[in-house]
Length: 143
Image (cartoon, rainbow, N blue to C red):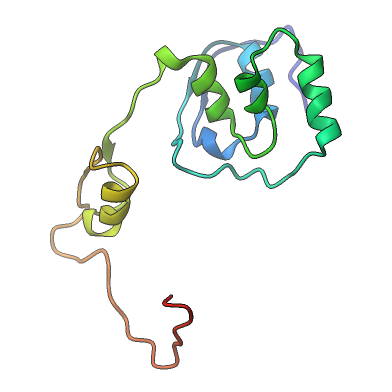
């Protein structure tokens, strides 16, 4: 359901914007101010694909938009990606991470975020990762 044009939002916050497809674009038109929160290291949840014909039609219908912005309107790209490309000087990295304990996010912290995250352990007494031996478990292809 669409919000009538006369109705506006003073502030629109889109959390987990990397999980939102570009069909959220009308929110940007209706909001006086907008905050998008996301992680460009996450994969967009949009599993749709477009034919070459549809992609070419989109690009042809947007002659004043750079190809980088047009590409970010296509499936496989998120609303967060589009905002990053459209407003590059307005983004910043939130380095404090509270949702995962340090031992649970250490690999991602080092490998994906190049040690830019600061993690905080929710409980000093309980381990957040427990190793459990599964007797019936099988290993295939080193996984």
